[in-house]
Every structure is written in structure tokens, then in C-alpha cells.
Length: 351
Ligand code: 9MR
Image (cartoon, rainbow, N blue to C red):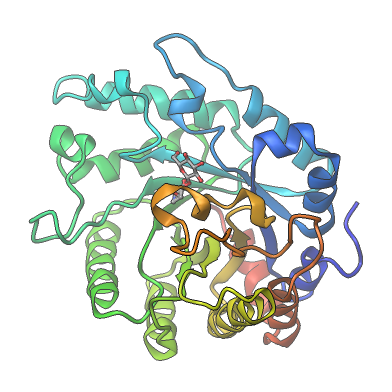
């Protein structure tokens, strides 16, 4: 069960939920992993097991095993559950990509959302309904990423995704999850501007977007701009949206090889980030993208550190010991203003 001094408790004292993406292999094979997730987390999301490529790798070859296992454990441990991802250009089996046409796109999307969101109806707090839909290098003036969904259905594919979720599971908050909007680079500021403009357009035409997710893949190469971040969060809140930190981790490639120095730098960056984020009452949940260093996606090929050392991006080390990043997250929760009442109201509002 949860420890009195775990991150779950520290977050809950401020009306927040802390949690993680769950790696299904560790979850199944390593009791210490399961214990760490129980100890630290008030909310979980399957890293991959609710994505189309995992649920239906071949036509008709359907499995919900992983998603169900994580759902059952969350229920047993009294944790909230998130879902990822309904509509994305990745995480998709090739056979589906080949079938998204003008004629069949709408039916395909409705059918998929009906099946996956229907299976977990009433059990998911928020669904990543569209994911990573902005790409300013794609040549469109609205900044929408050119994907098979966009090519087949036009920008209305976003409307369709949120409306369909609402029909299938009215209790789940529809969330737009987006990458590369949290740091200080000019190109990220341009993405924030595009996101806000698109949100205004979607909301004006009644698309039921209830939350915005900042993935929050922080990066030692890109500076933080606290003022720009604070302004962005306030603009999202001003549009009536709740906000989640959905995939927090730190790419430590530019930090020193020395473990103690690196852990300190990672922790400091996260603390500065969270100090801004947690000031905003609209922020409800903070999830890291896994909880233990050895599982980070940042050790995958193109994200690896140039010196070959494994990244130290997450709160626990390979022996499940709490790292300086863990303490930074705990201290950020402890030092955050108490917006518990506002957060309780935001959660109580219908999705
Ligand atoms: O970490 C996930 C990796 O195991 C999967 O292969 C990949 C494709 O489904 O997705 C990764 O998670 C991504 C997340 O869903 C969206 N934001 C970026 C994450 C890292 O690529």
C-alpha cells in the first residue's frame, strides 16, 4: 500500500495526484516494481497497452490483457487511471494506417474509440484523445500536423475524436496531449502560440476538450523559461481547461557524467519546472513517464547519451532507491500553494 511519505501522499495534500506510466513487463515480472508503483502513485497510465498497435496488431487479433491488468491493479490499490492514446499518428498498426481513407476514416475512428473507450467506460479519469497533433514544419498555416487522419478527414478529425469519446464515455475528460510546449526555446514558444490559437478555434466550435496535457519531456539542452511557462499555463486555465503533466522526465545528455552531479542537475531542473507548474490551480495531475531509470524510453537509440552512459531521468534508481529527483518532486509538492479546494471543484465538474 501507499507509504505515508510517498509522492502520492505529498501530492494529495495539495489536491494533486502523482503517478506514472506503467511498463507492463516490469509490472508482471518484478514485485519490487509493483511495490514502488503502489507506494508512490495515486494515478497510473499503461505506457502502451491501450494503444491500437498493442490492442490489435493484426486485424481481428485483439488483446486487452495488459490494459486490464493495470486497470485491475489500480482499482485494487485505489489509484486513478488515465488512458493513452485514442488518436495519434504513431502507436498504430500498419494495417490500420493503410485503411484510413476519406471514405472509411470516420467509421474506423468511431469504431476504435467505441471499442477501447467503451471497454474502460466509467473507469478512466482522462483520455489522451488526440496526441502530438501540432507540427510547425509541416507547411500548414494552422500548425496542424499532417497525418493520415488529417489527410483523410481534414481538421475535423479532432472534433470527431473528442465528440466520439464524449458519446462513448461521458465521464472521461477528453484531453489534448502535446509535446514540446514546456521549455524556453523560440520554436517552442511558436508551438505554444499555435496551440492556443487552435484551442480557441476548437472550443469556439464546441469541441468538448476538457483538459490539456503538457508531456513535459524536460531536456538538459533546452533552457527553461519560467515566465513563458507560467503565461502558457494561465492561458490554458483562462480557456477553462484543466491541465495535466502527463509524461515528465529529464533527458540528461548535457549534464555531467558524474552521477552525483548529474542527479543534482536533473533534480534542480525538475524542481524549477514544478515550482511554476504547481502554482497554477488548474493543474490536477503530475505523471512521470515510468518511475525507475532503467525503463526510460530515453535510452532508446536516438535519445541515448553521447557518452553511452544510461540516462538518469526518473525518480527511482535501478535498485528502487529514491534519487534526488524524487526529493525534488516531494519538496515541490510540499512547497506548493494549497489549491486543494479549487482542484476538488475542477475534478467534480463533469468531464
Ligand atoms: O514509451 C513509449 C514506447 O515504449 C512506445 O514504443 C512508443 C510508441 O507507442 O510510445 C512511447 O511513449 C510515447 C508517448 O506515448 C507519447 N509521447 C512520447 C513518448 C515517448 O516516445
